Image (tube, rainbow, N blue to C red; front, side, top):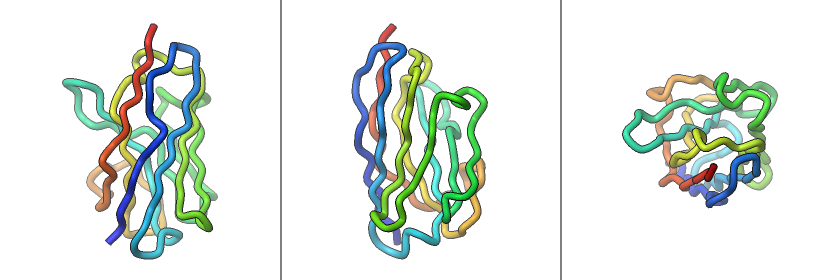
Length: 124
């Protein structure tokens, strides 16, 4: 079992930045690939970015490429999402997720463990 807790969400103006964190506890964090997903009101949950267990490989959704950066610190059991140049369309609840394998994937169904989510609101 992996317990995930997100933090760092909030209200920011367009063009601003936020840094989300996802703290993990439970089974060995370093062996889990991780990802961030988001869900806007009235929309399905969508993939944002994923990272392998080592942090050596990442995959980004086109909508955030060049603006968002994922990273992880296995010694601290924490994953991060640095979000720059935020846009109103980035407004959503952001969820961190973990899967029981070391390889990353954009497939939402491959992620077994989920946090409770943190709200990000970008005003225009």
